[in-house]
Amino acid sequence: MHKKITFQLNGKSVNCEVDVRQSLLDLLRSQLGFTGAKKGCGVGECGACTVLIDGQPIDSCIYLAVWADGKAVRTIEGIAQNGALSKVQQAFVDEGAVQCGFCTPGLVLTTTALVESGQEFTRDELKRELSGHLCRCTGYQNILHAAEQSLGHKCACKEGHQAEAPAVGECQSK
Amino acid sequence: MYDIKNYVEATSVAEATALLAQNPELRIIAGGTDVLIKMQHGSLVAAELLSIRSISALTNITMAEDGIIRIGALASFTLVHQNKLVEANLMALREAALSMGGPQIRNVATIGGNICNGVTSADSAPILFALDAVLKLENASGSRLVPITEFYRGPGQVALAPDEMLTEIQIEPASYVGCGSHYIKFAMRNAMDIATLGVAVVCRVKDGCFDQVRIGLGVAGPTPLRCLEAEAYAVGQPVNQATIGQIGQLALNSTRARTSWRASKEYREHLVTELTQRALKVAIVRAGGAELA
Image (tube, rainbow over all chains, first blue to last red; front, side, top):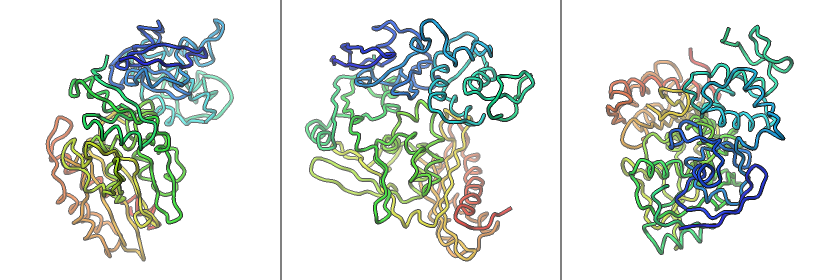
């Protein structure tokens, strides 16, 4: 059973015929060739498949492709503009927040959504907002730093992660 | 590929209930965070799905002039958490909404789906029990109201006929006006975890005594439940440590906890007595009562 859908993918209109049994993740990876979103657990626990739908992070493995009809979908492929890393991507590089890289696309997208929300977040709130992503290289500290740098926070530790903006609590790292 | 045999979409309640009347095999899918995972695990096969996610009218949260708060069944946990009416009146529901899953799940999972899934660990259930929430169930020929305390029939079983759908959760003013509430989710992780025990408490304090206490528990039995014996005891008792200690003890009499890989029966029972007291202490202050040491 197939259905025609139209949606925005990283700002470009896409028309395609999708199998109703297909997840959005499968559509993106197998049919459209956007392999930035990863398939980790397949049950919405690890966050590796995170994409933004109308600006909100969702797990694309448990989101049917037909549901994308009429929506604006953003994947990691749409974050860098004209070959230049976004502020969030640069922060992940600067803070060494990438190890094996499997969780990175999802984390960059969720952090991008937080930045674009225009809201302020305390460190505890940031931890909660990033809690839908598992990093098995155990790099959370640097990921938190990267998220804080993306949001313009000053880290309370001595390494001088970014200047200006509100301090958000003690930095645990050395 | 998910094992989907048939997939139809409805854009209104009338359309959805008409489709359900035609085909009782249809299974409703909203956020999909339970249904799709069941399919992934193989416990739901050759599914005939009716998607109701396009019925945008069911995402509203409103308060009527008479004070009844109506939560659309398709309100996502993110919407419930961010809603001003919920924040101002139903603090424990707000806490419960934020305790569920992680951000990506909360953005799609719906409060109605959480209830209709029928599991005892549903994070929205203990507080909806404690708020005496009423569920509006609709079919092609009309609607009926069912108290949530009568909705759960057993693990994964709810009083929803094959041709019915949950459209709205109603909370009467008598259940929340002048009350304080608190929800404690006890789990192994701070996020992305299923509750080992969930405790929701609603109370009202008058002249230093409990005017009303309502306690909803999740994972303390095969379904969410209320602690009626403890609640009856509490009425008129002075708000002090001795009273809440006794409430915690009596709460245990309403439970049917069991041992699972998450926790033993004994551990869960300990959690019931302890967390009921801790939740009460917070709820008392929110209800305008004095803080207990």
